[in-house]
Image (tube, rainbow, N blue to C red; front, side, top):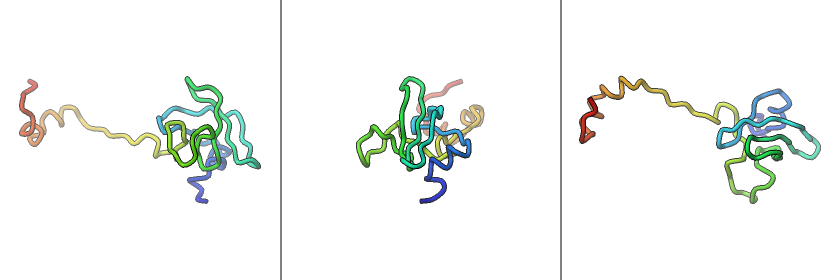
Length: 100
């Protein structure tokens, strides 16, 4: 198993873990022998995850919003200037209206 997929090692190292729906996980315990990470998520309460980051309460093989994601893959950011977007000539040609 790769280091990026071993969430127990990441949690033990103090890395902030997040779910697929980008909520932060507050760690409450790590059971390396059983391969479980225990923690809580806002609006969900106490939860547990397997070593690979899959949510214990989910159906096997089905990815869900409570599964853990590798740090830096959790929240891809897209940043653009609003002014640049409004002045983009290609966008103006596609838009059937004007916003000025």
